[in-house]
Length: 80
Image 1: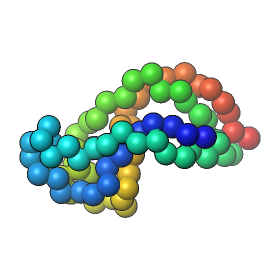
Image 2: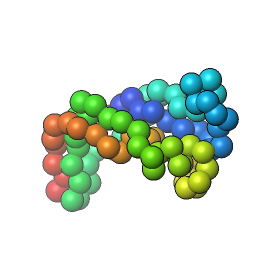
Image 3: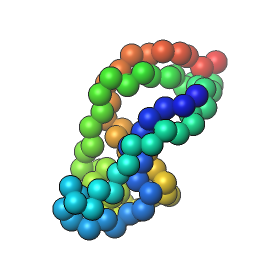
Image 4: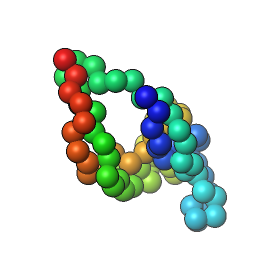
């Protein structure tokens, strides 16, 4: 399925982020939920200090990466 996400393509963006704009809203493919997973329809999500640490490169992660793991939503589907 297609979803929209705030995607970081590369770490180490210059401050201020309002000018360097390291995140881009992109349409990406999401697999259906697998065993022991759920699909949540997100109503709102925010960026926390952990996400900012990924953006500035203090917490290296594989790129690209969808950020915003603190979210609120409704369970839409259950995996097996």
